[in-house]
Amino acid sequence: MTNTRARWVTLGLCAGLVLAGCSSSSDKGSPAASDLQLPVAFGLVRDQAGLAQQVQLLSTPDSPSFGQWMTPADIASAYGASAADAQAALSTLNAAGFTGELDPTGSVLIGTMSVADAQAFFGTDIIQTFADNGELVAGPAKLISPPASISSIVSQVAGLTALLPAAGASSPVPAPASATPACPTTGGLAASLTDTYGLTSLHQAGNVGKGVRIALLEVSPTSQQALDLYQSCFKNPVAPVTVNMVDSSPASVFGDVAQESTLDILAASLMAPGLEGIDVYQFNPYSPIVFPLAAALTGTYAPGGARLISTSVGYCETSLTQQTIDLTEWLLLSAAATGVTVVASSGDTGSSACAPGSTDQAPQYPSSSSNVVSVGGSESNTPGNLASGMQVWNSSPTNAGGGSTVSSVPQPAYQTPLGITGGRITPDVSFLSSPDDIGPIPVCTTTGSCQFIVVGGTSATGPGVAGGLASVLQSLSTTSSARIGQPNWVLYSVLATEASPYFTDITVGTNDLYGVGCCTATTGFDAASGWGSMQANVVAKFYQNHLNITSP
Image 1: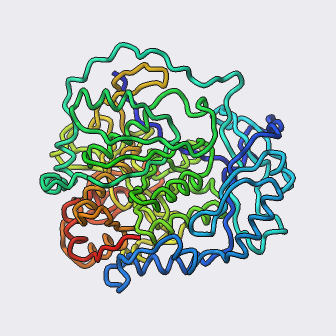
Image 2: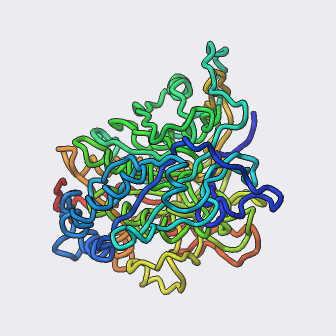
Image 3: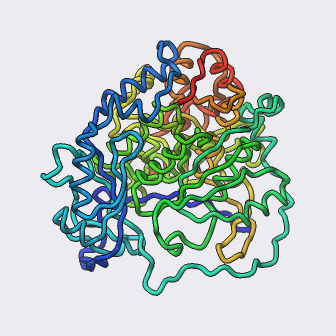
């Protein structure tokens, strides 16, 4: 049995998802096919600072606006771009070859442009070249910005990058399923997870995520065969899964192995065995997270849509342009303002999120956004025995849970009382990541071959915490309408003023893989484990006592 870890997707393209400099000096790339359609997003001029202030008011327990969530139309009216600017931008972009539409907040145009049209509009070549890992990628030869003709109404542009099929590659052809592998003799995780994360009493009361949907952002294929095999072997329910393709990428760019998505779906289902469903948003591995995030958010606004979004996809923060970050932050602020909770895994390379390219201290994004719950990695003090307590996950020399103090994202007000200098500090909480603790899961190819493999990594952490919060949400309302938005404003303020067991502290271990001096677990908050392991029952009790539930 292979001991491996779920693939943590670090899309560290140089210069902010732009190809310039990403290949060797001898490889200048070649022209991309002129009719190739590439995803592109335009951020319109809007009041992003005003929305950020409103999110703080909606999210802070002592605010009279606490929990009074907005609708996308509210955001568009109060903080979004003007209708005239949106129409003018759309008209100009349509004339330039853009095909797409305005997002529900009236502030982001999302769609596609052909290589030929994008080159003419932005005045730069779109080339295809080989990234350092050998993958064939298309993208601009230089950084792009809104052209002068629309710069007064469009403030950001992101995208125009994509992973391309290798020469001669074809989409996998489904074949008859291979012989079903024997079930592992080791037991499942369900009971020990519910004890570790304070879910036992919630589950016993029937709060198992019924009526709640979770959206997962993925760059790998999903295998129903693997999920069925897991249920058959471990007798644990797995939520119904709906796969949404965010773009028109051919199946061959996603690979043939459904591993990361399987781990993510199982982690969420173990923590909330009664989930209404999981909505997977599968997107091109070299595309910014703007696109699946926007698609998932649109889904959350629909009746019965997901109220939690989890991403295991992360980017070396320093590889992203400020335009891409600003545009993503608008979407994350919109999520928080409408009561949607976004959870992001912090990465598998410890406090050096850009490794192996750079081993300096650095965070993953969007884990480093102030508008998400950042989740680091933990492992049991005694491998395979969660009751022994938790320490920081560290499988030196290559893997450890992410955590950092040097983000370029400004430190949010909810972290100011910590007294730690720097930008946004990650993680906020921790969740089980060690392969020795998670154990074997079925990993299937898209052509029907399956085997049980021991896996782990922080890919499981975001969906795991989202699953725990799904059980919390069910406990808050019988109308399937409760939302809690960005809970960090609650969790940090409560911990600063009350001696309550909202978390089980993690005080042992470090996530420093390269001697950068960060980060080591201590009593209380630290950048190796955050506050520790969330206790869902206590978090639920707080919201039951304080949240005046409204639904957008």
